[in-house]
Length: 114
Image 1 (spheres, helix red, strand yellow):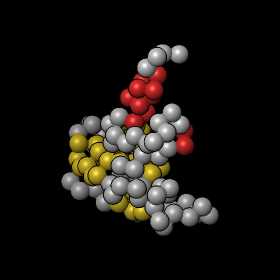
Image 2: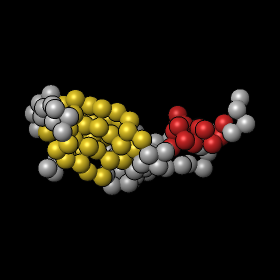
Image 3: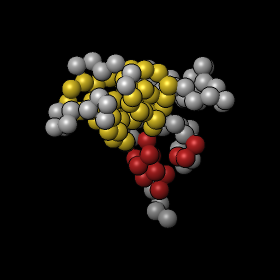
């Protein structure tokens, strides 16, 4: 292992980074998920950590930016997004969200500001 492996792990797992790209057919949009820098106390356990700060960038079919939003910290899970005839839904299942329930998957309808 590298001598500076803890520092390498922090850079890989916890720096500002774009993560997922979701295509939402009904909206004819792509959603690029941004995860903002967030380093937990135990930064070697990346699998059990969920970032607290997320942003979304909305792109049209030509990859032009048509909107963006920064989500309220500790309230959303940027890994779970989908679109349907009603709009764009994002998971509110974040471990720090006081409304989270282990028994249900919860999503909130969001609006793209263009």
